Length: 149
Image (tube, helix red, strand yellow):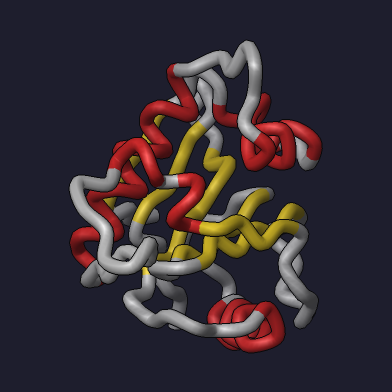
């Protein structure tokens, strides 16, 4: 059975570019993320895209080649608290404790800014997203929540 991504980002011409799965699980390793993604992609996804993001409260695991279900470690392991800092209202001990729904709202806002913003002086994480081609793929696009095929 195909999974539905929690969030998807489409290019300006309407093609899916990024699928995002949001989980409220913390302290999960890149190897765990690789296994989770592999299991999820073992059936064809309802929405296939070149980039796949597994968003956890403490990590944003990012893969290019999102259509390939082979078990492999993420291409990027971004610190969620650092990337999402501008969207945080409060933090406990420097680590946000989001429930899954809250994390989805924050990610939707962040992704919406990614499609609308040209990072003149990019943060290190933005430079990483640019390097793997994710930022150019979504610039000027559209973010959709609760995506169906």
